[in-house]
Length: 151
Image (cartoon, rainbow, N blue to C red; front, side):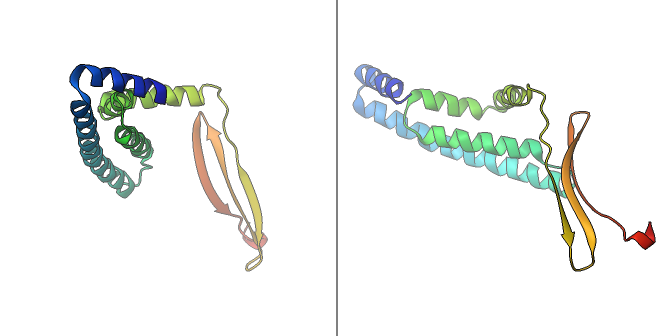
């Protein structure tokens, strides 16, 4: 990727000049940082709304990661990385890319199942925690067994 970026920068500099190319690279970095900040603030507000409503803000978290990636590639000098970064700033493109990545990640149909159990020595009850899949939906939970006399 760096070789492609450098060769493209050299070609563009040959056509529009070194100073114009440097100015354009600086302009895209500043513009990208501004747009990432604006969309990041909006995504954070949506995340807070979802959390306050008692819903898991999974979409907003994934969008936040995509915006973080967009910011990183926009601050990297180069036209290819700028194109990727600006594409991630377009919400429909960002969501389409997130959906493609999610389908690739979850295409194998495997469900991660983690389960831990421990003995609480303070009140002698067993606490169990884990994740299970129900119809493709992961449900995390924690519960405490009632003492034997209450069962």
